[in-house]
Length: 249
Image (cartoon, rainbow, N blue to C red; front, side, top):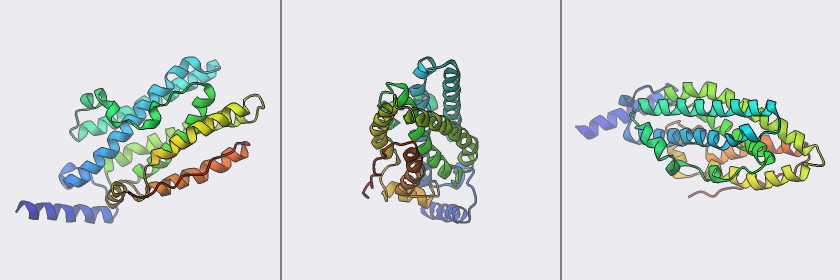
């Protein structure tokens, strides 16, 4: 009987997903769906928090008072985004205090890299926040209603952060005094941000797409990110590395 109940739940859930309806309660979803959902939401929550931590030193380290205010506002946004994600996780029964205490377990490697200079900071801002924007677009269209709705405002704010990175990368690239430095920052950060999308065609990504927790394969998202930022960087006079094709499992 239990197997039959699970099969019926799976069929009802997949019918909703395939018709474009949002799922609103854990009572509607299977264990596989919940596991996939938590994996993605935990990763995003930690990325928002880790991103804020990386920007904190640049409230003091920014070159002007206006930029100190801008960095303080970006940190505030990222902390608020993290709080929104942890609130979503609270609502599905996750002990978020424990999760935050052990957050290093979920952290992407890119967040371990030191941000040593203002050029590093704005290039990371340019590349990583743009990458996050593409991934948030998938989340905003996902099948889990509470997450989808929360992403709408977060996505808007992340694109505001992207504009900040664009302004400064362009400014540093157009000065002969800082062109070499910003090119060095691009060479350093590009391969690291390129890897945050994960492998194309992976089994886990196929599962995410089946449940419409992601809309695109990792490689599709990577290529969309690359197609958007490459012409911008080249228009600033910077040399952009080729995008890696990460092989399937």
